[in-house]
Length: 258
Image (tube, rainbow, N blue to C red; front, side, top):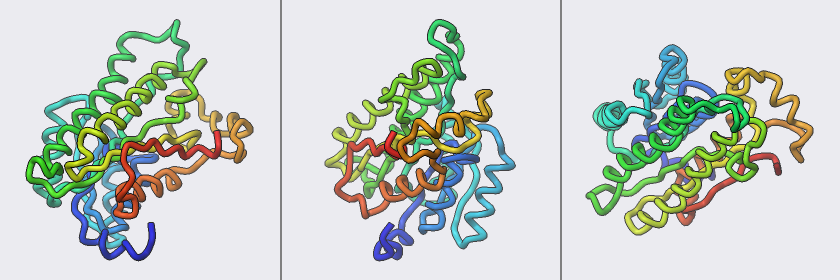
């Protein structure tokens, strides 16, 4: 983000980052906090790591709190937003990062329970969190505007065949939702964009039983390497900031040319 905007962003309000206890979410929370926003570090599980992220933000001079909430549960979402605004101040941004893959499986082997849970987190959770953000930030509702950034995936374009077509489908839904909501609230002071990461070095791969996946797939990437959570966080911060003031309805791919 340009240094010229740093003082302006220091006057900014609260940003909620869902799924912020690790990986891309944690990197995003730290960078957003260092840029002057107050940060609500959301987690479903992993309270200890979420509190570590908060401690890092506070140690760097920022403001942050950890808030437990499962974005697959509407009542948790309502509590998340109410707590964030009560403790940190008016909402100015939302990063819909929380997501699960539903596991590695060909379509012929995927289970209904896994699909239902994955869609509840990835799609329903994103839509309901965005609903709450719009209700608070929209000029139409007396808000002062803001920015929503959804974390999608390059899998939405490549399809995820042989690994997680079901997950790719959920991210295709996020892309469509991003474009539609962006157009719906563009005149109400809210920008809505998405980041579509490619192969990123996080524990997602190990969690799904393939810890060697980043190394194995790196040769298929034009840049010959996996990306880092910090590289994704930089894109998120740009979309949140006033530097992206004329950007909405965009799917920003960060994937090393994949």
